[in-house]
Image 1 (tube, one colour):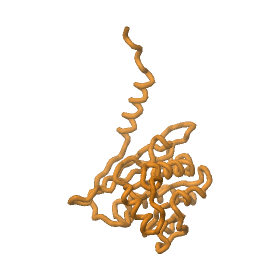
Image 2 (cartoon, helix red, strand yellow):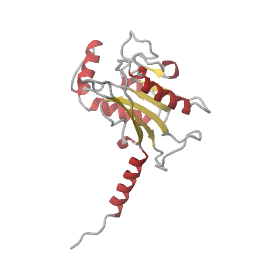
Image 3 (cartoon, rainbow, N blue to C red):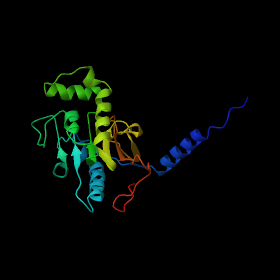
Image 4 (spheres, rainbow, N blue to C red):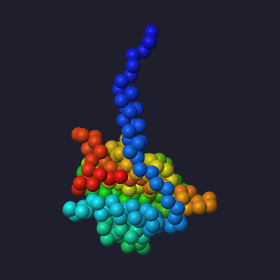
Length: 213
């Protein structure tokens, strides 16, 4: 007996293809830098989105892992390392947890990229390194909190060694991927720009008259 046609599955596939066709992907070479947001193509990308967000009104931007970011004056900044100039020196999860639901317009998210990097950061600060700090829940718990605090139509700009970003699972739509190759055997730095979808409309929004691309 022939099975019925799965219209719902077909419509989902069509939506995903349309999303992919609208996805903006760029690849720009740049020298590596331990201060990720100082890498010029990434700095330019962040500057563009901050400018678009602040055209008509003040916005609230947070950076849970600020390091020596050039955007500290535009953000509520946090870094676990007390030797780094920041507004707060908390564990990133604790920092994000202090904000209300739908409170944040933009998140600059440059966490440790691997369990080894997490371990190194915690050991440097004489913090406990255990299963909770070195398994995937370290990142998923941060993503859950980011999803909670970001407003609908808010922006996240995430850096890492993959293009997962915050993710559709947590209500975000991927609108741009920036690949930064560094040459040699260096891993690319992968930057994702995502927008938090309005749960009522689930449509691609226009902010301040500008469609984000």
